Image 1 (cartoon, one colour):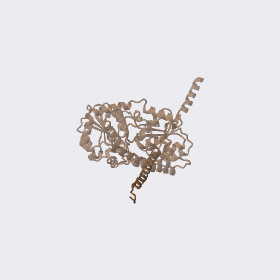
Image 2 (cartoon, one colour):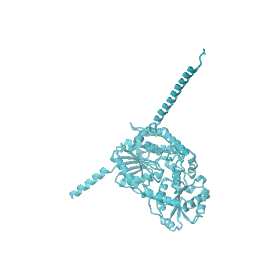
Image 3 (tube, rainbow, N blue to C red):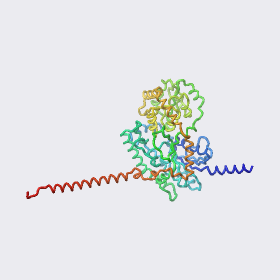
Image 4 (cartoon, rainbow, N blue to C red):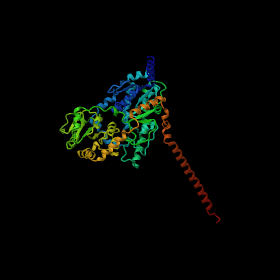
Length: 525
């Protein structure tokens, strides 16, 4: 009995030693970002770590060892009030701007998110408390760099949760290679082929340069200003210095399937698809019967959670309805309306369905999607080809990449017609290469040495074990841009070359004058 008591006490002590207190400050009101971060929180909590999370979205299912504090920035209400016309401002602009993603707009939105977070009463109480945390988790490169101050305040290593794949700003902050010649940035949207043309590389270079310039000389100073106005503690480092001190980046990516292949430094860990194991929900019986009885298969149509599809103009809805009615396949349409005009008998509408379970059904033949990153990943995981109709953010990049990999076709809303939609659907349905490519990419996507959840937990615990694991951070993350990209070296070489040219010019000029003087005939002759 005594041995059992000692053993039980030992287990409790060991668990207390191994479990960490983790503070997660994730105020951005984007549900997709929340789905990704919640999957990470759940994996860490199941491992025995204690989570304190501040975010707009409480977990749908209870998470053990998890305390959630609701945080609702002003921008959350703005998103909810967006109309269909608000979304339609974006598609026509994507490929016409060299700064395609309009990332500045996202950063501007997040200024208010950061301000509201730092002014929140609960956050103010937290900052003034004597709480102790072993790790702080936040999202930085989406425009919330001032929130890195929580790592400084609690003297804890910072792990950044990045809701999308590595891009120019994240790569720059982590010290990773930008690979401008071979990896198109999703702010530029220039790629059409696997290998970038001269024009592609030129536009990619200009776009990335503009992004970095704006980030370092406009965005980060504004983040410093937000911190100065809302964080009243002394000896606070600059936001730029806190960015350099980030221990680890967990990215929503897969190195070979979801986005362009690019190198990764050890402090960037791809954990794309971590949410997939938590989303496999049962399908409502009427939907299940509809899918089971689809002898010719069915098409799943969803434009995500943000786009108010039910508010589309009648002429746009008519395009879809007229195409759907002439297809032999059934259509499962996720839309917040049950009163669409002239709805064909082969179409079922639902305000919500468990998307991953639907895509995984044996009769699912095609996914018509907006190309959001989670829909992009889930379609790849399920091996379902796509017809993509992107709106904004990373959606054009994802849809374009699917087309490049031969598992989908891209359409644009501003040029959408019944003819273009019908041709795209028929092409993907009846050309076997699309299904074959989708199946092959699904196999690659699922073939991993360890699950995304296990990978995320391992590397967060690795940071814990090694006190921030700064040895994962390359020296390139600490260098100013003019040293990192050898601008100072190139300038010295160009200056040296220019001086040599000038010196040679004057030497030759002197020699020429002496030659002319020596060959000039004398007056006596």
